[in-house]
Length: 289
Image: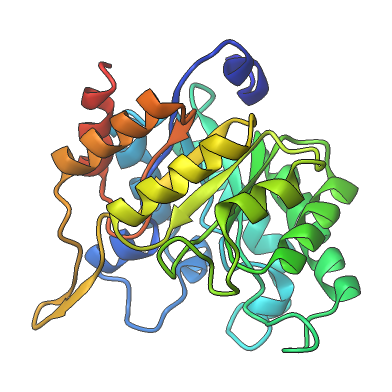
């Protein structure tokens, strides 16, 4: 199978998978349980979701390791098992999709604010992201994705840490959960400007708010960067109902929006919170596959 970098260089449009956490909720994960716990306690369920996305048409699946950095695991049942969890998450994804699809090692923020607003220092962050990237590489991932970042310093430290541990292609994706700004007030243009000198395979956005907000974010990114764009929006803004959390954007509507993003210039698209295998299958159809 051609590498991720080769496929981008050839002009291919890649379809990524959908949500992990919200689909695990649909699969009856216990309330309050971190998705990464299923990597150890319910590996068959992890494999099942990866396979559902692959069958729906995804070219790329992300490992169940978003919250598996050492600082983020520190106060939970997986404390001290960072390397095991990340390596196993990568192995499960590979077992699920084989060699015909790409496996991306997913790394999220540490959950700590950077100094002076919180305890996270550059030294701690770089070391944590380096060891997580190394464990994911040991498990056999094809690339690494930094997902749902909102603070520039932490993202830059994550990039530094990953690059110190591996030569795998790296994507950096921010969450613009304040509409067209991150929680720390960053605009897509500010993100693109600061990431431009970094060695990245793609940059972009995931999660966030409405599809309309994500459309504005996509337009701003495309206007200020020539890097390949990664886009994984939520299936709408969540609503709390008696039945739980509901995402209102139907599969065909998400597929149409992602197809529009591709027409605008996005190179890798998929879904985030609330997006199911049905959403990815609809996107695959919208892309003419």
